[in-house]
Length: 204
Image (cartoon, rainbow, N blue to C red; front, side, top):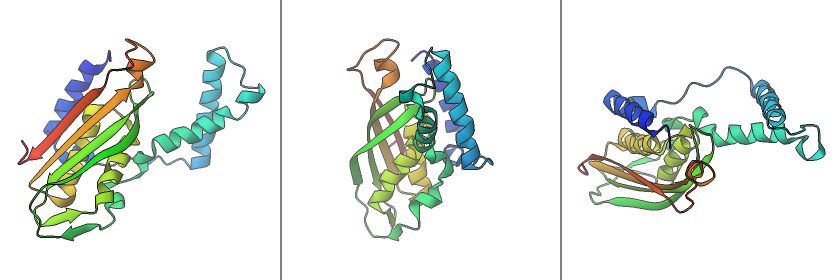
């Protein structure tokens, strides 16, 4: 991706700021949802006109509203926080071996071109007197995936969120995805996949 060099600098800055900077929920917009949808639908209509389409033709009449609602769903992670996701599903347990959840499917939007990247998240951690509900690991991954993202930051956010939630001895997160910005445009390499990792604590 042409903008990836800028991402590296942003990631370095985020890592220096610590976990709190990575897991802090985005600010919720003050505008009511109906107002937001109306503004977004108007913007979609402008996009359609700009590419030479007719927003008034039958097949596109409801497209602006549909796309606006879809985009709000794709980015619903902005209105979700870590406490919302965990919902007190942290339990004291005398288990000191690895806990691994593999093949958590995710779909996110690349923040550079707003096209999808899809793939899987693998999470492992070594508990320190506390464990987290297994489904919460998938929900944490989903929360961060449902924002405009770069895969490197997404991987790190998941790892730091788990560390913040249960303070384990170590956390390891691996994310593997196919990026439509490399498949549908640019270099157009459908078989390329991107693998990123983030390790904390005893895994370092």
